[in-house]
Image 1: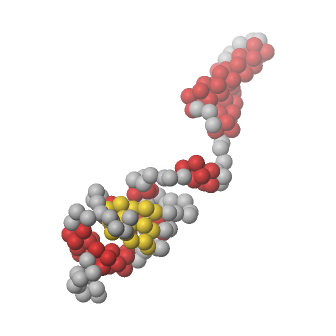
Image 2: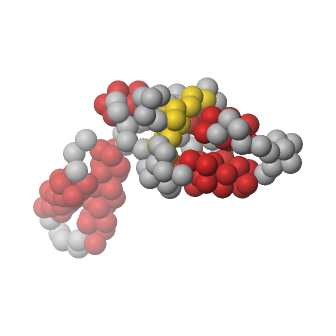
Image 3: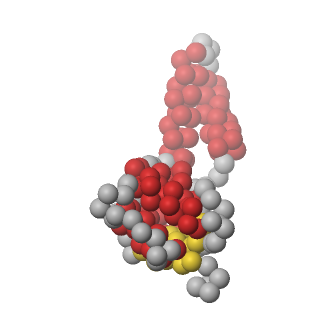
Length: 173
């Protein structure tokens, strides 16, 4: 890959300014700049300008360490067709980085789902039962019949129908 593309590996995606300087030095080792006074915006523009139509692959670990501020910088670079990212992550993705995370293709989806789903508790059926019981009591309260057995039976049937309808509409787990 290194013969056809510029490839760079970062163990950490932050600090971004240092990583962008490494990128710029990789693309053009002769590029002259004062590293103490160049801004992140100037670095981004210089990388895109120096890259021209060459392909760049950026590989880094710990995607979850990105903050909202740094995600914007990497998203800007990702918006170009000739810049690709390969990232890994260990922990759950926070909501600030989720829009950027959605642009990636997960290679081991099943393993990721198995690892992250073990902390979740499915309350779907419990919620359906509670709603059905509430509907049962609403039915009993609203029905004014002399035959209490018929009311209870009708209420129980009504609650069962509500439960089954919610399972059908909400999907099965």
